[in-house]
Image (cartoon, rainbow, N blue to C red; front, side, top):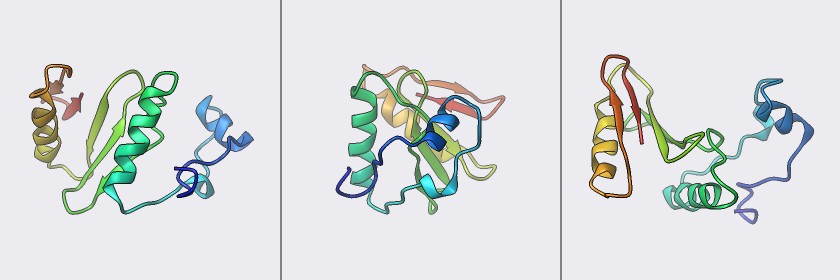
Length: 113
């Protein structure tokens, strides 16, 4: 991930963001159109000393969803428009694996793995 420039050394600006003291600076963003990069990076963040959540987003503009490692465990899924059925489909697919617990709050459009 470092070779692909998807992981960067910690900076004061990013650390300030992690502690909630500032917004995420745009120059700290790394972009990749390769879904395998997202999978590898997500595994790394979830296995290395717990979950580093909400700092890696896989955004699929065709489906209008963003999937990300969640703060505490698993993944979250955000609909980029008012249609959240793709998020539900993703989470129902994940629910087939007995190691996952899926939470869907249809009233708020919240879906969480």
